[in-house]
Length: 210
Image (tube, rainbow, N blue to C red; front, top):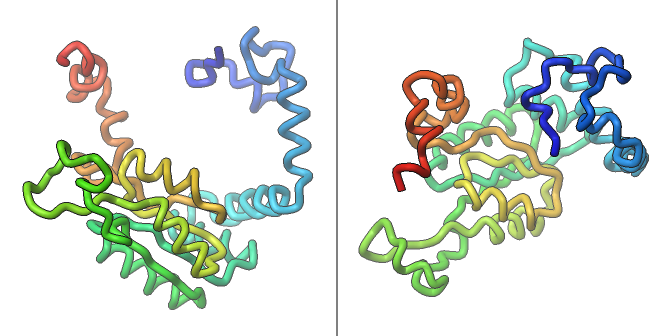
């Protein structure tokens, strides 16, 4: 079992591998070598190198959206595809304008593409609206951005699980710009930062209340 989230030694950063905990992945030579070889594949190597370059050039100076554009430039991506929640349509439109003003071609596609109903997808008992309700279609979003021949897919506000399906079925490189959290104004880290205060009981005792 890996426990990097609790590690206080951080030998992965210091290089003092002899001080690594017994369960540290640094002690797994097979994992290290197999992952290293993956970076020799042309696309993986290019993405890794340009990600490092983007981090270096914009560290603590560029916002996330600026970094996405820098990374896209470094990769030679010309066409960006935004996969967004229908509730993020205005924001996606603004982002598209920003991308376009910086020379990119942009496609935006919302989660309700193809208009599949909850009834036909056997989800009728989970309707939020008693009337006509369309499900999110992240697989369709992924297919559409591929059909549009986008170079990079940018996720904006897809629901939990829907984003999983999008990433699973999208054959394009994918990055995030915005994560949906309806309670915190789409800032999910706010709940983490409050986990030892106002949100402690809400988060740590969630299952006890079921």
